[in-house]
Length: 413
Image (cartoon, rainbow, N blue to C red; front, side, top):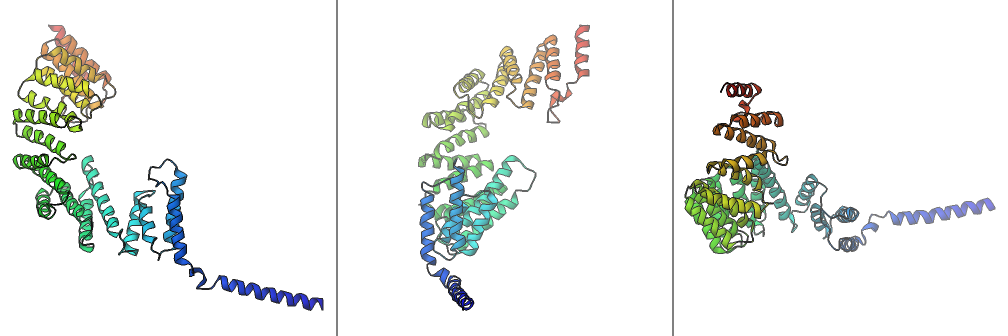
């Protein structure tokens, strides 16, 4: 009897467990509250991400937690209203560029009608453009055209597939910038001309006109470049007017209109005194003065700029240039001192320091002070054992035999 009861109880328990498991594994049970759970998951991720984290957030644990929360939304609720939102937000917080591209591509593929689809296409296109720009500026031996061409293709895709996108103007503009990066300046001008009228009432117009001026400048069509830059200045756009004004000075200088270049530099300094371009103009103005052989004025401006803006990116080149102007002005003492100070500064680039030391020796030689020249040449050989990277640099001719020959000639005198 006891055995029967035990068996009976086990059967009943098994039956209850079976019913419970059956309910738990029902094909409909997990989806009863699917969308409500998705909403709750999205609310939760918003709570976690308040205030919003950034890719450089110092709290790496919180950043990882936010990333995980976004991924949980689109992984667990791919058919919900929030899936594409979460996917896009995670793409903005990637661990690597490759991960970002993967997420953007997934959004484009799985949610082509998402409000973020055009943003995702744009993000990949713009990244390709930026890679091309970085490679071009570094002068890499790799072909950069592939990146520009890919960017053009993606920008065109955005314009075609997502008509009316708020990114349409940016895509059109960046196609022109890709052509400019490729060196296809005529195609860049054509693209800029085509969109200039279309976006005449858009804020991007100032950028279009500025870029048109840049293209003309690269084509060495300085007159048309100045016309476009003057248009930008007349618009008074605070972001582009100072740069355009500085470009006008450069255009005059390139045309050897040095007096006009001086006036243009002074205008930049007067109109935009608190900008980087005014600071740069303080250095640049020495160049037209030097070309006009007004060395004293060139020196005054350059010395003032070096003293006033010691952190300017042009400071190193300016110090070397100053020594050259001293030399042109027949002020050999200051030329030697400035070149030598430059050569002895370990913070400067090796080749530039070597060049400065070579100039010191050459100045002494031209003066006929062979004792000082020989000492300077010996210092060059001692302090700069590696040759200048440029194969045609005259310092490569300075060898131990060369110095010994100078000594022998000097002693014979």
